[in-house]
Figure 1: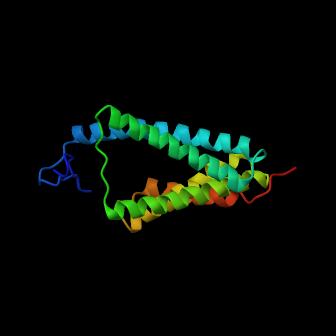
Figure 2: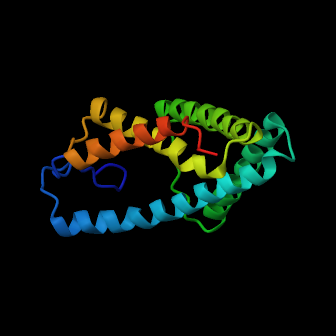
Figure 3: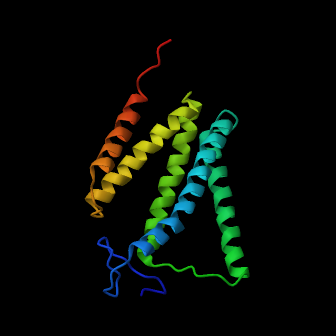
Length: 173
């Protein structure tokens, strides 16, 4: 047990030496699956609203407004946890540094999406752009985190990269 949480290795063995059952794996997947759905919907709407804003606000100012609003939203979430006595937040130095790097990527990525839309990029291009990011994450997961490779996963990575390059092909007029 680590801070009240079970640590599960890639092989399904828990940090205390016991094997995780398939039932527990299914429960874990069910737990995170709904967060994944919510994140996908929210990030999809994020791009729709960025597209709508792009012609009405400059890239830097728009990115600042997006990130400042995100900061306020997260502050409200933290205040809710504090006021309901459900605060379980913790931090380590490496966790803080990785979060800073994440913030840099999110901020720069937000500006890039504003520029993409301001330069005439279609909203329908965003899924392929995000698929390119998903391919990058999958490759890093395989190479740096030792996640298992499978033919469906490798095919998905390849199709994501192909989709990103297909964005450069001009549609027939």
